[in-house]
Image 1 (cartoon, rainbow, N blue to C red):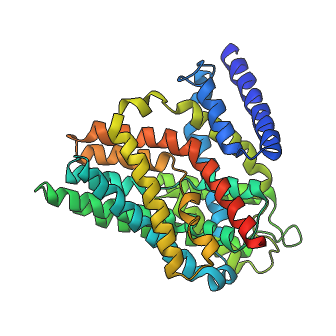
Image 2 (cartoon, rainbow, N blue to C red):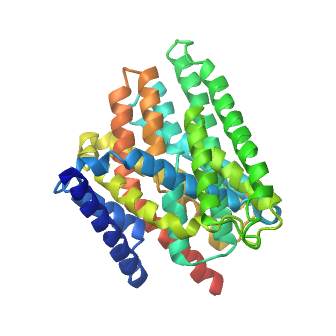
Length: 391
């Protein structure tokens, strides 16, 4: 019972820390995501090691549940109305950001002496973003405009681009090293993408009709929880992407459930407690020492990814003809990066054991840097766009 007691005490303190972060965020310009991650960093193994082991063990499931809820809500942003108004901008900017980041990071790393095969893989890792952090910064800002709508759409489809780019670059890197192994990864990636979308459709189609029939057009919280948990669980069981499956289901429901007035917005009412635990435990799992371990190459990677996001966002915004005051801020708003990049790094390490340590160390160090600094820059981008829009 003592172990349960310490875990419950720690969990209670986490929720109170979330309340404090929310209050501080409202009174300052600091994103509560950064505050929560910083709190976790101090309380975790890199700080005072105050998080009980029992609480650390629930991090994987909390991560899946929190991100699944974020995925459903992002999918809900992809309504026909939004796509008609912002679809061109979403697709153009997202592709430009992915390609700009990939090219600039890979080219820059080769210039500083990183082998081409490793540079290509690291460039692919750099394209990944953190949807949870970006969405929470938008929500905390309270802003709802063309910029935020497009930004949420970009984050929603970013995971799909990331899967395809990573799979393609693994094959290219294997070709560069003279090893043809890994060519099946593209087929696997396409299969995962298709399977995840099919799962989202399989759950979203009946849910669009069945949910919300008991409560005047609005899904009950238990209905929302059931659909989210079912989608995430089946995706994990089938070895699919629960993010893509959740976004697909959310998009199907928001477009087909015409009896809903705000499809699955009930998720927002219980999402925040999960996100509090997720962000603090994510911060507790960060290794601040990783920033120093990778040395100059790590610093080069961080700087190159920033440049790649900024250039890609500006180029995509220019091609999509978005207002000039928005173009240079899409890239900075997409700086947050989280566990998806680390997962990709672990896969890459299996394919390239000779570069595995460097790739993994870079992914971990970048997560520390971009999880703490990314939300701050994203919040700044939202403020600047809003200020210029009022002029």
